Image (cartoon, rainbow, N blue to C red; front, side, top):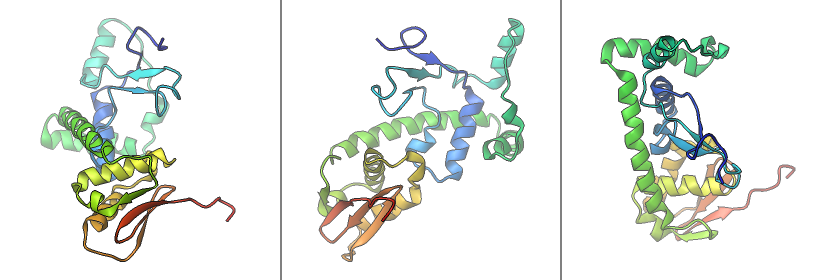
Length: 220
């Protein structure tokens, strides 16, 4: 069976403020729905169940404020541990935590809850886009451009992103700007061959097809 505490998995202590920081970071990176989904309520500790060896993480406190968490611990005299790197403002996340989000809370109310709600909506959007993108398929090395052109831009971006990940690209290496550039060209009337780089994956689009281009070995 799956490893973990109880049937659901291994719980972590990520709370609503962590979620708000993650969503804001994704905004700054120009992320799409997947990035704006923030910290997922549950995920395998790896790309899939097999790689994770059945270990699944769950985050049951993403809707609980940091203040509520600390108050609960104080009331029950439970000690907690603060990561010493949380104070390191050389890290972007910490600069958002200590300088940006406090100003946003002063001017826009319960920003943490609002950003957490945005993440929840974007998770639903991402799941719907993934369902539509799967219909295009990922196994073959070539796709008719006309088929790709028929997709909405957001579905095409999701398809290209997942395609690149399935061919070895890391999610962090695939920028939303590159995905949009690809989608815009595929849907355009342009006929000149164009090459797009999605992390380590290369996709070449011609007037009639889109092809995965084999990545040369690093010593070439």
